[in-house]
Length: 624
Picture 1: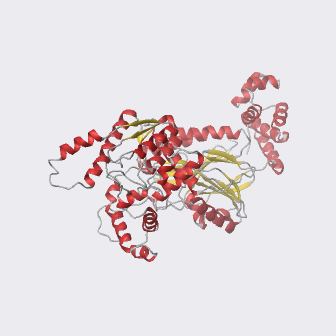
Picture 2: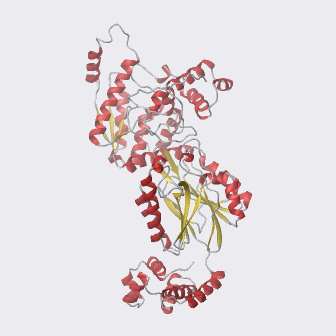
Picture 3: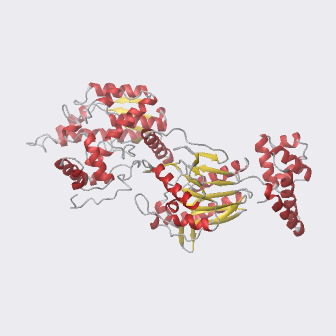
């Protein structure tokens, strides 16, 4: 592809670090001519072409041919245009190899202008380093998933405007791929946009996922046609995410001459997802004997968190490049960047929760930090650690709200963790408020025994206080309930369920302990007693969770089979679990759907998360 004078000038500017003024002085170039080079009104002289080639370390004949072609076009000399195009073709045998850059970015859903600006800015910056092809993730322009924003006419119109803005501002000598919705004849597609030589081409996703968290058939039509293009004499095919999980889209591109497949993705994280991706891509690679580049998005979006982890694989099925997880970054595929040692599952999940919490707070732009009700228990301790790692200790506040059943150990441990993490810490005793509520309710409760009502009242007073502090401070309240509790309803509606985001919503209680122990390997912040002591809501004298629940090891094993794997009670009993316990757990799960429907969103890390992914009726007579 022809490279223009202004492009060579940009490369020289990048290589030397000089301003235009310094370039003019250092290399004795007339300032007026340099201004014309920059504006595209004048092509490089032959002398300056050789000079720039020397600075950039490239073939002078190539620079001369490109700039002679540019001058011929400026002067509308068709004969010379044809001649110099032929010379460039003749030089192709000695041209540099294809240089591809992966842009693993963190777009914000609906932030079309800033997402477009990020694509433009990165393209200009990376072009100056000699990259030929820059690749962004699926729906990078609008963010993923845009959901019903796609049904708004004004949204699609803005998308189209931004695509044209990107086209006009990209360097013509560079090829760029990014994901975007496109509209053709009233049909909407999930597309890969290729901008090359100043022109726009598109590939439309063929296989639309409509399971789990995905609803793409609600919005998009399926594409039918492969896209294969040439860049630096390499034939490249493009697919979008789910397309690679079926053999047809890839084989169709290979049949049209593709030597390398690029897949752009917005693939959300769940445990072991990256290994699944590697297995699928390796299968496509070995079937077709091709190289494969997998580009994934990164970042939190409501209940989803995208882990990045983009990679390249050669035609032998070997991973040659592995980008980091949970980090926005760019990487040139011109040298092997292999993964370091395999990360533990605890580190991977913890990093996912931190990024999800950080992006939920910061992307919404409404909150100035986070607030946690710190009880001295394991769940709030882990939530506090996540919040501080996500937002910084200066942006986190912790409040302990003791009552007569709160142990001295809980108060000591809460205060110790808040101090070790350097967060703003306060204690508000709820005894006066609880007494007032009991007094007001006494006439209505005459003759009735104390029960869970009084326990839940403590949680609801705490929830009210925390929401008041949240309103006044502008900090989002992070609820601390975990998946095990939410599954069986061991949480108080409008009490400890109060809050705007639930970092532990998809984390089983046994994993909560594992994550707390992992976090302490980084630096010791969660007191050992919090991890070692029997878990308790401390809403009644000498209360522990196992007074009303099975041991968490047993409970979580049953819940994994029942919720994650969707097995029946009969099957779970056959695996060795007590029949009455399994039936009791299953009944609690179904009976508490109404609570979960009113719970705060939280990041998905399992294969069947409560919320967007798991959709059960509240009113149902089904027995498992």
